[in-house]
Image 1 (cartoon, rainbow, N blue to C red):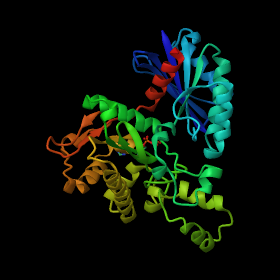
Image 2: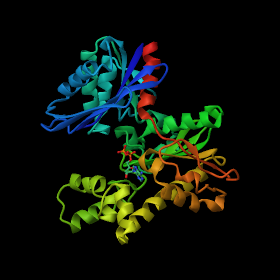
Image 3: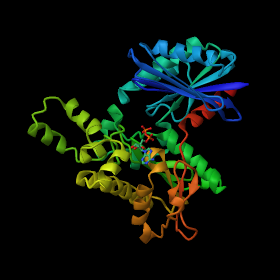
Image 4: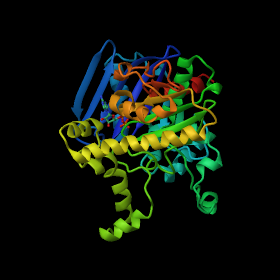
Length: 399
Ligand code: ADP
């Protein structure tokens, strides 16, 4: 038995999954929420639909990791911790250093920490968990799977900003992208569904969750993506503005007497997007409820959300050398929100895109939703970043 653990660590949560490889059978998944607090919540789903949930103080990251391993044994999810041969860690920024997943040596760990300037809320936390799990599971290989590496195939024409190139040369200011593991998973999966080689697969992938991004894929590789230097760019998101004219920043700061640029960036990151426009919520379902009840701002938020997606898809249709094989919707909104998919595809009707309204009722399930005569196929492909992490970790741990 070869078990692989996939770890997705945030500042106040720790998500984990365990896969039996190479069968790719998920044997358990869980998370710790409100980590660091007295009323943290430990959840696990395992076995034949069994569930465990407890509210308890989990006051440190080290305690969190130890508790997961203790529970793996006490809930009989894992017989021997030595069977966990690899731990794959999602790492937000690999900068320009890592163009693929990699086994974590002390050098690699140092580089991950050094890249924390590009992902201040993430890389250091992720690096910390690498050390903790390496200590607690000394028999396991630690592997880093970077959110950015899928975008290492971007060319300068697409990743550079039209500013003095010294900012790139001296400070690394460029587009790095985000959600790469998700875009990579749905790209590979769609090639499989289409039964064609990845190298011949051209797609536009739409990861629409709380964070959201669109990528253009040519010959199985990303050529452009809507996220930027940070995950604030591109589409309108749950709480993030996406693209705005940077000149509004000093203008709003002056009008609102904001002293600190970080306050302004926080407004763009946390109080904008669907939340900012609707004034209701960052959650698309709440917006839909409010819009159904006649809330004008919620209706505007719905329209703007779709509008930004359409504009990015349009620009990527133009950027690709030929019509893509498919448009692929994924993540919370992409997998579940029929009206968003319908509205995006309706706007592309003049390009021959047609979806089948009955098939578009699909929720969270892998499905072709376009009609047979659609110029471009349209798929819903539920994302699975953890499986991608487990696969990479298994491959590297094997070697
Ligand atoms: P995260 O980026 O946090 O991983 P998810 O991919 O889980 O986000 O997506 C969260 C978003 O998906 C939320 O806006 C939520 O409202 C939306 N969502 C989830 N389920 C549905 C649904 N059934 N219908 C519409 N939107 C949904």
